[in-house]
Amino acid sequence: MLKVELDFALLEEISDGIACWMATRECEDRMIEFVQCYCLPQLSLIGISLGYFVLAVALWWAGILLVGRIFRKEGFAKSFLRAIRYPSLLLLLCIAGFASVSTLELTEGVAASFRHVLVVVVIAAVGWFVGKVLSACYQFFLKKVLHNGQPQVARRTIITQLLYFYRFAQFVLVVLTVSVILMTFPYIRSLGVGLLGSAGIAGLALGIAARPILLNLMAGFQIAATKTIKIDDAVFVEGEFGRVESIHLTHVVVATWDMRRIILPISYFIDKPFQNWDAKNPEVLSSFFLYCDYTVPVEEIRKKTGAIIESCPHWNKNLWKLHVTDFSEQTVQIRIIATADDTPTGFELRAYIREKLIDYIQRMYPQALPCIRYKQ
Image (cartoon, rainbow, N blue to C red; front, side, top):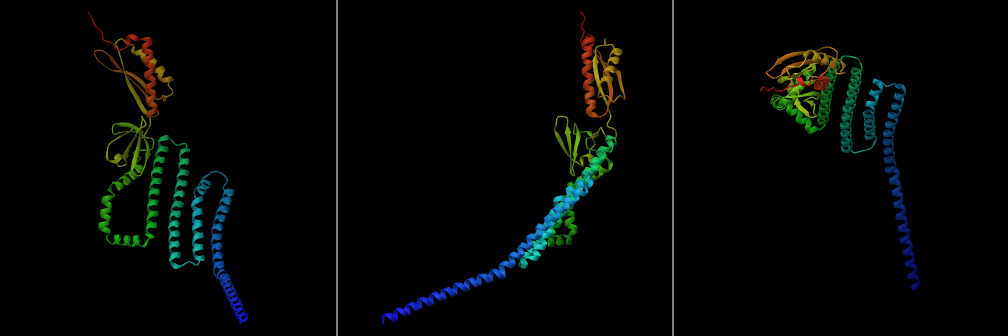
């Protein structure tokens, strides 16, 4: 009996082992079937999707090399292609992204989310692309203006107009790009339709709120058209003398002689009077006064002044004069005028003449310096 019981126990162990082996073999078969039916197709789809991106980068790189060989000389075409290099890469990657989303077996919600993100990136890339095109055109025309040999005033006028219209185009581009991106969101699109339904009230409120901005924009167009101020013009505003350093869409920066900056709204130059010393011709008539004693030899001073002015590199060789314009009970007032090409040069000219005349009078006619006489 004991032997029979042992045989039955052995048989039970053998059957359990066979059942466990068969369960393990079935699990392995299911894993192989899962890998063959699901993982391998998905991995192949992922590989194809990555291949799209590799192909996009390869096409971009081949295009860069081909265009670089075609346009070897520096010029507008080379600078233009250099500017759009990276925006074009982003657009090609977006196209590869759309192809990948169509290739991958994604759920409808996930695919829609990816497509929306890609649409936003494409709109931003197009805005970037157009912005780079504007920048390349601006730089090209700016270099052309700087080297065309035109007079300084005409050159500064064109530069001012170019700069303003370039910045205005950039502003419009940013507004349009952001607006189109926002309109891809359904809630914001429905909000926009609702605002259009009440366009009268919304337009009135928006006009009141944006009145300062609109005034400055319109003033900028007026300044660009009428050439009221230009880049590097010498102006006298708010009791300060300075030069127009930059003109923006809404404000103008004036740099003073002591390196301060006066920020003025661009409408200031439409609404308020100001002095523009370079409006038509940058040439200035520099003048200053010399106070001497009645014993001063005017003719000798005139001769010496002429010699000093003619030896000064800041004089433009156009005009100089010396006159006795007034006198008081103690001194004689002598006015000296001389022309210079622009305001900074005129300042240097005045300083040069003063220094030389003071030295000359001190050495040759010290008695002609102002003095007070007493009689006993």
